Length: 175
Image 1 (cartoon, helix red, strand yellow):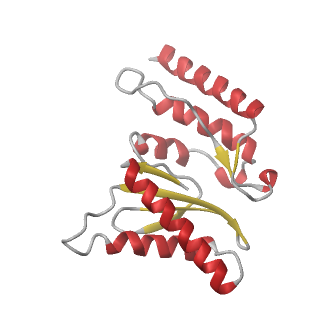
Image 2 (image 1 turned 90 degrees about the horizontal axis):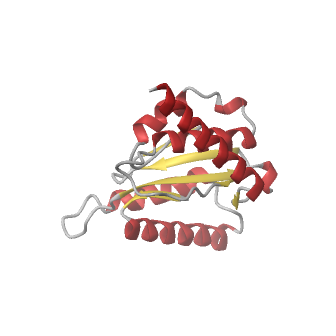
C-alpha cells in the first residue's frame, strides 16, 4: 500500500488495512481478496466523510495485490470512492504522470520493463526547481517476487534510476 497526502492519515489507513486483512484471515481462514480489502478500507474512509465530529482522511491510497484473480491495483480516494487500474498515480504531479502512464501498454509489459518506465515517468514529472530532492524507492508485486510485496532488486533499481535521469536530461535538452 502507498499513500499520497497527509502522512499521519496514511499511517492510520495502512494500520486499518492491516487490521482488516488480519480480521478477515482469522474469521475466514484465508487471505483477503484484494477487491474485498479495497471495499472495506474505502468504506472506512467514507465513514469519516459523513459526520461533522470527525475530520475526513486527507490522502489517496494505492493498494497493490496479487490474489486468486491475479495482480490488481486499486486506488481509494478520501471520499471513499475506489477504482481498479492497470496503472495510476496519486499526489503532486499525478495528472502529468497519469497522462504518461496512459501512453504505455501496461498489460503487455513485463514487471522489469514496467519498473524502468515508472522510473522515467517519476523523474519526468519531478520539478527540481519547486520540489525537494528525492530518493526513488520502488517495490513490486509480481511472479518474480513470489506474488508478495518486495523491494525491486538493487541492480534493477539502479538501472531504472540511471535511465530515468537520462530520460529527464534528454527532455530538458529538447526544451
